[in-house]
Length: 66
Image (cartoon, rainbow, N blue to C red):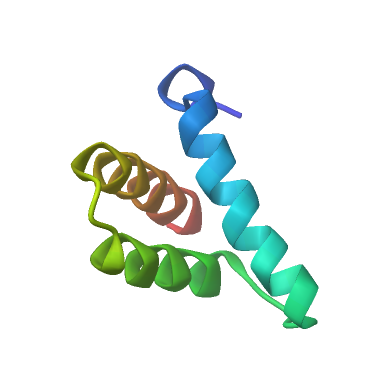
């Protein structure tokens, strides 16, 4: 992946948690749905550092979709 240097372990953890939710609920997903879910989680997050991580992953997913 060309964005490896921008992806932190914390960002991967957020991505993993989001994907796990989709899998646990049996919901098929695409990058767009994953990005939307992360946006909703970011909006409800109270920790500013976690919000920044979400934003970084959302940006990367957006770049991968285009």
